[in-house]
Image 1: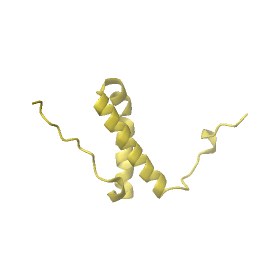
Image 2: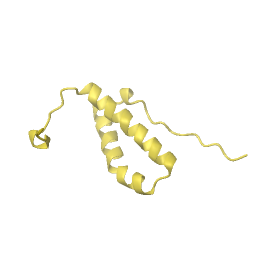
Image 3: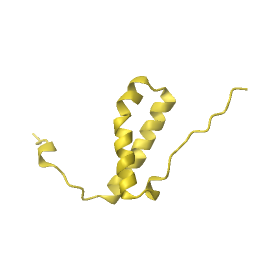
Length: 76
């Protein structure tokens, strides 16, 4: 029988302080490229799941986040 590995899911984002949430978001964004290029399917799936959890929590906490007008595209 192959070994069974426990998947670490990380701390529930809602339990993180604002500072911890920002640190986790920074970390997950900085590791995305390497995970995409060199991670296994399971690693990429887990990375995507965690990114979505953290970003969802950020948007929940900061629904009126500052939008930089220079980042907007005009609709044609």
